[in-house]
Image 1: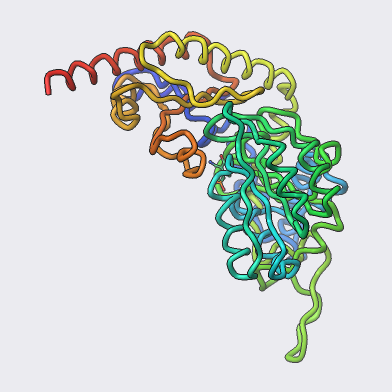
Image 2: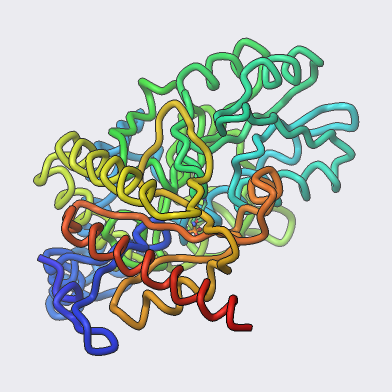
Amino acid sequence: DFPILSEQVHGHPLVYLDNSATTQVPSQVLDAVANHYRTSNANVHRGMHYLAHASTDALEHAREVVARFVNAPSVDCVVFTRGTTDGLNMVARGLSHLLQPGDAVVVSRLEHHSNYVPWQQACFSCGARFEVADLTPEGDIDEEDYARLLSAGNVKIVAMTGCSNVLGTVTPVARLARMAHEAGALFVLDGAQIMRHGVVGMQSLGVDYLAFSGHKMMAGTGIGALAGTREALEELEPRDFGGEMVDKVTAARTTWEELPLRLEAGTPNYVGAIALGAACDYLSALGREDIAAYEASLVDHAEAALGEVEGLHIAGSPKERAGLVSFTIDDVHPLDLCTLVDARGVALRSGHNCAQPVLEWLGATSVARLSPAFYNTPAEIDYAVEQISRAAKMLHTARRRG
Ligand code: PMP
């Protein structure tokens, strides 16, 4: 289903293990995109002609599919966005009116910059406190510290990830959300990483907002969604103004459309939304629980195999890890390592992975990350680990020789 996986890179078969950054796109989704442009393309929600209806119907069908996929309270509780970052910024900006000096927003030290900086900036501009819940030595959210921050009072918003893109920590979302609600705060879930690894039912988790990205779940780039409870989405002040999000426009006053259009100013990325719907259908047909179980077995396999490499340290040992293993190797820079394994066809990620607070916690400025998806095999992981080991030896030898 994934044509790109048959590519050769640098003369070697591609072993793509950078799925936490972006997943590949199956033919079913590529075909949905091509078919839309071939047969149904027209601007949505505007025209009265045949194609305008076909295009609008396809977009709204995709919204229904996505709403079911995340168990949103209703179809109009799904807003299409450019991705997780866009959705989180939309919420941070849209809720600024709730924040007064003395109020607080709580995040965790696990957060990606996308779920950290928007809240920090909102707090700076509103005079609110920006609080960061610490981690346990294993890399789980320290729930005592979280409870302490909540008990300080005036916490209006909690924003946390479902899964860390550095440690792979799966967070206890339902409990974290319940604690936030008991403290009178709204709970925002960064679903970027967890969408593929768990069956994220928005309503059963009890979150107020869920932001996620299509490109991390086989849909391709430029699309994502923000799902929320009706009440929570209605609380958002529109961040973007323009076409289709308005009801009545006069020089004196403008009124807004109903949800979700109120939060989708301008021509939406409707083909992206159609791709996201097709990706949700694809994942559902494969079986999300089966995917999660198989990917968990790949992560266990990677953890065990990497553990055998001399001088290699796996980042964190959370209670539950999903999707990825990050690591460092003594006297090896992750960038050098990833460059050398790339020459053998293995795609890994290196760097701070847009999560400097957790890198600082690790005492590192950079890590290497191996992140499999369901199209990977244990044999590919073994090959990657063999190449990692070989590259580390080469780098150690080069270092010894000066
Ligand atoms: N949060 C997490 C946990 C992520 O891993 C990422 C992507 N690396 C993001 C947010 C941001 O996603 P995007 O770049 O698609 O907006």
